[in-house]
Picture 1 (cartoon, protein in one colour):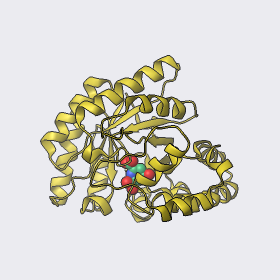
Picture 2 (cartoon, rainbow, N blue to C red; picture 1 turned 180 degrees about the horizontal axis):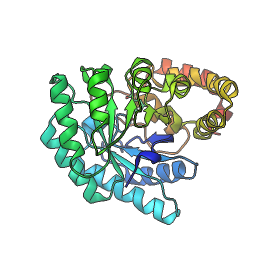
Picture 3 (tube, rainbow, N blue to C red; picture 1 turned 135 degrees about the vertical axis):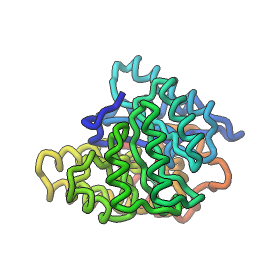
Picture 4 (cartoon, rainbow, N blue to C red; picture 1 turned 180 degrees about the vertical axis):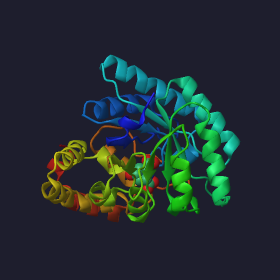
Length: 298
Ligand SMILES: O=C(O)C1=N[C@H](C(=O)O)C[C@H](O)C1
């Protein structure tokens, strides 16, 4: 199981590949995860936003976790598998966190409850219940998607819960992170790709970055250069990736990413489940402008 000291470096949130008839394409998943695991990544996240969690069934999550475990065993790699278990219903979140623990996941990623707009007290209780399951919990704060924002005060209380090992901060700026850094806090991963370098400078211990599915080694190098103290060099490297990151998030995720992975022949199909739609020609064009063919296939 994951511990606080494992919350650093580059975590890759994986996409969920579908066939053209909208079934889980487990063959593509196998090829794709084997490719990712061949890089020096710190961990994988199944059923995150990038994994299209709102339209993925638990049975499919189970299959993806099992295939990932098989791949890690056969490649003799030991990296944590984090599973997204959070919903806007505390009972279901607890149930899913229990199921993830039974599956042998190393941690659960629990998003702030969305849509029903709970009070700060309700949000704290939600995380208290999830953290009592016994599987380490990574808190996932993403107000732009959830419709609720956790205050610094509440986040500090959540981070103090025994079963919580860290935060994935997709809060949309540096305010939450800098406020937490004023106190002793558990590790925080950047979950907002365009702020990756800025958040490292502010004290983040790494990133959970959908865009690191592409140019994975460059993201790892940026992290490693930063960790070795080369702030300016790592920033200059990161700047070269910013246009790609911008276009990967120009339309709802993970449509642009699925298209790129299909182009790279890593997955068979860019299919998404409705209501998500395939990436438009305009974004494809702009992505191709910033990624020469040679660099896309790197
Ligand atoms: O997969 C995720 O979960 C991620 N969520 C963030 C978002 O939805 O904006 C971005 C991050 O790159 C991955």
